[in-house]
Amino acid sequence: MFKEDTLKDEVILITGGGSGLGLSMATKFAELGADIAICGRTEKKLKKAAETLKEHGTDVRYYPCDVRDYDVVGEMFDSIIKDFGKLTGLVNNAAGNFLSASEDLSPGGFKAIVDIVLHGSFNCTHHFGNYLIDNKKKGNILNIVTTYAEDAGSAFVLPSACGKAGVLAMTRSLAYEWGTYGIRVNAIAPGPFPTEGAWTRLFPNKKFEKKYLEKIPAGRYGEHEELANLAAFIMSNMAEYMTGETVTIDGGEKLSGGQFNFIDSVMSRGKLKMAFKMLKKMK
Ligand code: HXC
Ligand code: NAP
Image (tube, rainbow, N blue to C red; front, top):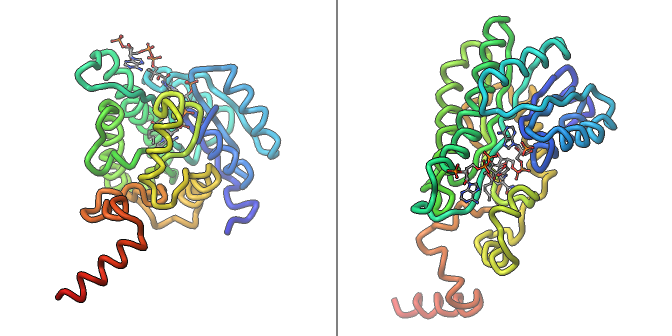
């Protein structure tokens, strides 16, 4: 689907690009010809990631930065634009999360996550949007949310659910408001993709993981390449007319709430089919 130069002439900032899904997206974008900026709080991690990314031959730079600090984020955008001469895309990927009973959350815990997820995404988006608007340039913003941002929220990850729902509202609000400037804003809602960051905080043991897998019709977790390909498509000019959209990539997990979805967990598919036939005969 992609040519090697699909993202040539693009300069893309991926927040939290030093690890996990952010690094996988950065790798795919670099493979497809984009120049890459990554940011995060841990310089050592960023430096190592940048060295690997450079193997693809494009310009790669890293910027230690906490996305919670509006002024520091502004300085980062100034540096990126000075270093690369321009910035065409932003992926708001940096996030924080942990499992907690909501009644046990401290105000500081709630604030830490909402600050990273929602305020961090706003801080980057606001600086980037103003740069594009002031310079009459088109641009592209991709927000990484979660499937629970859109639907019923989720127990035990309240701060993340609230923060990500806010990012989704920002996606749709700005897609409309900034469409007139040629700025596209979309989101990806991933299901579970194994990363050290998510797994150490959200998947405490093998028993938990096994139970979790039962919710996914595809019967497996996502592969980073699958998400990175989707992100590359959205960031490319193949998706030029697409904005305000949230694409779910979760092997069907989000649909697990369907009213009768549970019944093949009560008996085997073979027995179910026999039961359905008997019900048909009884009519
Ligand atoms: C309850 C906690 C906590 C925990 C921290 N806090 N960890 N509360 N349970 N496990 C509280 C602290 O007590 C403190 O509140 C406040 O949060 C800030 O804590 P700090 O240690 O100062 O952390 P800080 O550096 O500000 O923030 C870090 C963090 C940490 C967000 C808490 O987890 C982190 O660095 N995360 C980054 C990466 C990450 O989380 N990746 C996973 C994304 S996965 P008080 O009140 O005591 O001051 C994801 C996927 C979802 O989003 C879907 C999966 C399928
Ligand atoms: P991850 O590896 O922990 O990635 C989070 C990144 O964000 C890290 O590189 C981290 O680096 C950075 N970060 C955290 N706080 C920051 C801050 N305040 N300022 C700047 N950077 C910060 O986790 P991941 O699983 O790849 O998650 C990536 C994205 O996908 C997140 O938005 C997450 O919510 C979303 N997601 C993941 C899954 C999944 O199954 N993995 C599912 C749904 C959604 P530092 O700690 O060095 O700052």
